[in-house]
Amino acid sequence: MGRFDGRVAVITGAARGIGFGVATRFAEEGASVAIVDLDETAAAEAAAKLPSAGGAGVKHIGIGANVGDSASVDAAIERVVTELGGIHILMNNAGITRDNLLFKMSEDDWDLVMNVHLKGSFLMTKAAQKHFVAQKYGKIINVSSISALGNRGQANYSAAKMGLQGFTRTLGIELGPFGINANAIAPGFIATEMTDATAARLGLDVEDFRKAAAEQNPVRRVGFPEDIAAAAAFLASDESSYITGQTLYVDGGVTLG
Ligand code: NAP
Image (cartoon, rainbow, N blue to C red):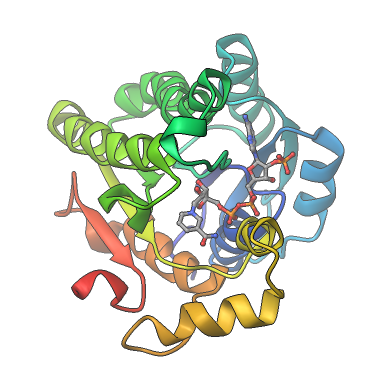
């Protein structure tokens, strides 16, 4: 018996990185998973790699969609419901960075980051919640970041990630009476292509960059997608049904001060 037998989970930006790690964990625990990502081929290839642990009826699909576009989002959620038979878990994980110091940050880079993280999470949640409310059951997980607390060169990303914490609290208040839990995870440094790209942008070797990040937190290692997947599995399960509106920092203690 898996915690997600008979459940359908949708994870955005899950063709790789943290999202793929979470998709793998949900699938291992019995869920049918829809991987939503910009590139349908990459999403489908990732879905084909997921394990099927839930027995008969378990199916994984990849869907190409832009979370910042309402028509694309509505079509994606409808496909999930039609092809997988429902929707029970939504993880808003798709993300991008467009880092720069404020005086050099372009309006486009501000808008792009807001569009993917904030508007994307809003549109996906709005499309999913009508199914959640009708069935009086749903789990929403938004992906924030330790950068919500402020990070040099990330005015756009930091604002979006703190915005997601406020969004999560409001979802907790509005949707709790309908059997829906909404929580956020704020990862610290997680070794993915996103952090590898940051290393490249700073002209640093990936391993040196990870080593330096590991030295900055009390547990003295970087995080991996599996660390976020473990927290997400708890928040998507019925073991956390009395927890809503919260942000769980999964960061090796780096924000403890
Ligand atoms: P990643 O490896 O860059 O993966 C992000 C995925 O999101 C990519 O597959 C990307 O597709 C997709 N995506 C981007 N824009 C999209 C859109 N408009 N619609 C649908 N999909 C879109 O990133 P990650 O490190 O796994 O990060 C996942 C989440 O965790 C993000 O929200 C990130 O901000 C957050 N986070 C990460 C860290 C970290 O240290 N890695 C720390 C804190 C928070 P393309 O490749 O086609 O662009």
